[in-house]
Image 1 (cartoon, rainbow, N blue to C red):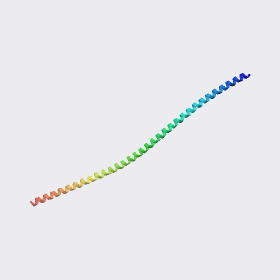
Image 2: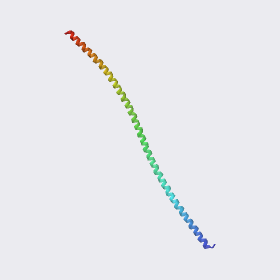
Image 3: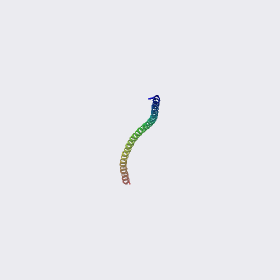
Image 4: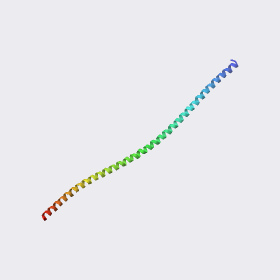
Length: 120
């Protein structure tokens, strides 16, 4: 092989190697870009998850507070129910006593009328 052929072959190999290196660098650049985009997406997703976590925590606090309110309202309803039952019992006792008082007044009126008739 002569020197000129060797030089041409070396240049061809060099061009081929350079093309391969350029293709590899291009692929590496695209991969770096993709990795960067994935990193940004992961950060955005993390921020979204953290935001949603805070919202869920706030909702949990609200639900707990409302649960406490419902429990307090349950106690109040029980106390009100007890008060209404006591009021109903007292009203029944008052009606019974009023009935007895009415009977006593009727007997007293009858006795007074009888006494007035005997005096006249």
